[in-house]
Picture (spheres, rainbow, N blue to C red):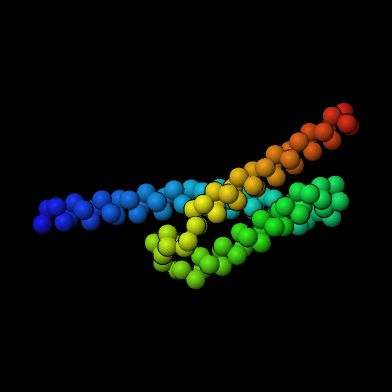
Length: 117
């Protein structure tokens, strides 16, 4: 009886650790996406100035929103773990969004040095 309880506890510990890791990445992606979405959807100028990053963001945004639709079809928290490749997809999106943020930061820095006070 004790061994059965211990095995069940270990199974739950593994599931909770997986969901915690998933949520850490998910929160990071969501934070980055909200920030960049405000920039790329709000300014026509940025679309002209950074066409490559705009295109990349639009592609990432479509993928992220598609993933979120899958998640809404799994309202139980633990069911999200059963979505194929969800962890890898979010990690990849986090990496791609980070690259866009970096490119945006580099662009802004170039602009600052071009127009000193």
